[in-house]
Length: 141
Image 1 (cartoon, rainbow, N blue to C red):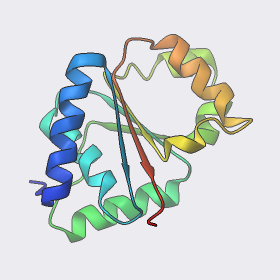
Image 2: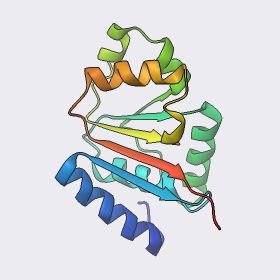
Image 3: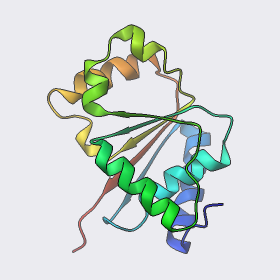
């Protein structure tokens, strides 16, 4: 079971509330504060939900999973992972096969990159009503 730090419990509860109200939520916290754990907790709490997890790289996702396991959590089995580059190169038919019930946009500020946004736009057009959780970092000042 994923046990969130207090600051992430607050963000998690806010995200769940926003998802229920609007279908959209964003967690914008500094790097290294556990944003991915919030996404993993949402997956854990909704095990029957198919989650499409989009990220800039496989390395980032693997590192997040390693951190989760190190913290005593288990990898959620309901995640279908894709990089933004992979999504960009997928056909509409392949994207249609994902059938997500929730989408996590990790480092969502990168989803609008010149080429990557083409796949993201196709994805969003196919799944306009699927809830979205965006995760991204903010600088500490």
